Image (cartoon, rainbow over all chains, first blue to last red; front, side):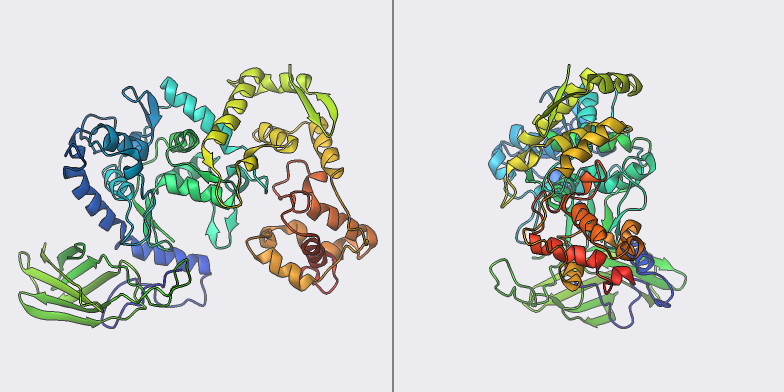
Amino acid sequence: MRKVAAIVIGIVAAAVGGAFAQSSTVDEIAKYREALQDGNPAELWEARGEEMWKTPRGPKHVSFASCDLGLGPGVVKGAYAALPRYFADANRVMDLETRLLYCMVNQQGISEADATKVKFGDGSARRSDFEALAAYVASQSRGVAMNVRVDEPHVHDMYQLGEKMFFFRGGTHDFSCATCHGEDGKRIRLQDLPNLTKTEGAQKAYTTWPAYRVSQGELRTFQWRLNDCFRQQRFPELVFGSEASIALTTYLAGRANGADYNGPAIKR
Amino acid sequence: MADPMKIRANVVGDSTEVKVLMNHEMETGQRKDAQGKTIPAWFIQNVRVTHNDKVVLNAQWGPAVAKNPFLAFKFKGGAKGDKVKITWVDNRNDTRTDEVTIA
Amino acid sequence: MRMTTIGGAVTTLLLAMGALGALHGCATAPADDAVAARAAASLKSSFAARGQAGLQRLDQDETQKLCSEYANRPLPASVAEKIQQANLATIRYPADGKLVGDWKNGEKIAQSGQGFQFSDGPSLYRFGKLRGFTDETRKYAWGKVYNADAFSACSNMPRFGHSAILTEQQLRDVVALLVDPGSPVNQ
């Protein structure tokens, strides 16, 4: 568990001063989060990701300038708000990470094994390229309304599959996503749980990923979020880029349609 | 050299407001790894800010400061176009300096 | 045609399914079945065993299958009844008849990640006090913690005894938390 910043004398930083005694702990955490919005370490990942996007890499020495995220080769602005989408060249529906992986393998000539060596980073010695690239690409959709093409047949198919999976009761504890995210007012300890079966909840939740997770000290993506949910559901491990991860992402992203994308955000 | 900082400096009234995000692990030296070994302390010890080569901030930090620290402060004076330079030094004597123009 | 087995008994849910299929919106019952089957298969192929969590954790039992199926629509009384009966049949009581342990341990279990978060559950507040500190209450408490679906089909509460999430002694301790007059739950 990371220590909270204790900013030194003479500095105006996280302005959470005053009457702690009156407000509830949840309110204070909300204030702390608000203060942190201004100095979101996600920006450090965005900067690294932007650098990575523009730099030739891999055996074929190619940058991501030729990587088509759905709006044309190299076009990053607004791309995240329209993902997941169907890509004819790969003949599958892909989310951001699987599409980046596709470009790494097919355009830059990097092997899938090498590209996925670090999916979720752990400190400065073990960084994930996906997390940096995702932060950058997502940041370029800030202010863009979510517009996943749920009417496209392949996307629709994944959407329906994802919806079914959302309500799939399983594992030792009979948990489904809906167990925690299917009702108002639920929480785990001090963490409020969004009701993803309501449009408002789904919009607020999806549009804040990727996010810098203070407790992790890392920028985390939606692939990570799903993986970590299933871990808490006592399921085995969700495979990175698997069909289930795409289906669930498609369902939840589609449910967020219409809301402005707001990330990368900062979370506890 | 360590990863670059993200710095923003703006004129606000008769002062300059500076906000900087630093890339640093800030290991406290209290944590243990999966094998039970203590992860050595590694944190920024000194932060120095100059405005047109005049020191406006000098900070001594310890392991209580969070990973990827965010620092925001104001100093009197400063005009658009002036240079603000920030340098940090950590307990391994690693250092990083970045410069920004006041907007 | 859809046949389901619960605890050995073959039950036809065709009528219930067909009637509800008409109310389900764009998906008809058979198509919905197909999506469910595909979802189960897709999930199985999308996970990798890790530590103690093997892939068999993705195999649904009848209760999980039915509760998934009716997740988004009203659970017919007949289906609820069948689920409850099947789960009631799984309840095992301790051989020595001792159902109540130490509420202090029970409290630790409830607050650990292992147990359930009942700080949000009004149903457990003054559990023993409201029902009376009787043998009947103790037996009910045991049953509920052992297998909540026996009393409330498709309950969100994990089946702590039936799924071997808690040991027999841990179950006793949680029961004590609920039924011991000295427990904080009953103050």
